[in-house]
Image (cartoon, rainbow, N blue to C red; front, side):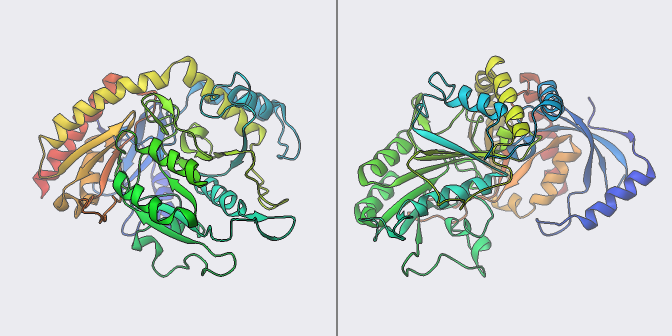
Length: 462
């Protein structure tokens, strides 16, 4: 399929798109991308240009998965059937009213023979749903803070008075809510906004150390474990540039937390179903135990924004203190259930490991090695890969993205971890390649071919 074609959109539709760009809140600064999606199916996007060649059609391959959320691509039959059935049969009850749709999902995932029993043994965890990954991590933070408080006596639980610190990692991204901003160490996101409450009766502080540095981790625990309440981590850092921990790092972190009575929170909003396994919090094929795990993005199959908070049953929130309108509604459960069943029966997780091998080899050989002035390093796992930009390319990232789209491939750029302590090198903005699980090997080859062509266009324009 050729990346470009003739004009395929009416003048009135084009007018509406241009108006929407003025009306829709711009989160990114600068001018919006000069492209618009008209329709899509699978990993193919039919788009139009909004600048030179106004209205000209573009046929793009989606290498981003919609911020990593559309694991089954667009228009998947399984998702369509789940929506049709559940909207006509399943009702809309809230979480205080039991639902057969919800019961079927939770029994399949968390029952005695549940799909996720190796990660979450039956009877040890309970589950809540939220609207987004940010809301899910916010609930995880709330569970952590509530764990030190006696709700009946309205005071600290005995022995928890000094547990006033949360450990997070440099370059992390855990969400955009005000409660989560202190978990980020990047000034761009935090300066000018309120930080953690002062260390008064129920205040909390947040410390940051470099991700993946075992010496820094052990040293921090040796000096601070007595005041540490919880650790929040991504098993693979996403917005930092797809940074993978060294072998054994997550296991060591979990063991230190368990030994010192510290809660271990895994933010798997991005990594869920993308690391070549259902969960990335594992090593050498075995799950690493957590106290709280938050999953999202792929969980909604690209049609629903949802997340799931999986916590040990001893972790709770005060009565009615975290009620949510959208907590595992029946329609959400139907889409999640039938989508996950398809992922399992079609062995899309196994398929993602084949995609990993093709992506790893192709991105390294065809991009990093062929275009060293634009790219410096490739890294990743499963269908979650990053290609780090050079300093020169990072300064012209919008132009690079437009060239790639003109060549027929849609990608996203992440901020990169930036400066890190401990002598670790600066991480520049990174191109994220996270195609849907349904992507074929031939489509991966075509994505790489279009990335090569777009990079050629970019280097010619510089």
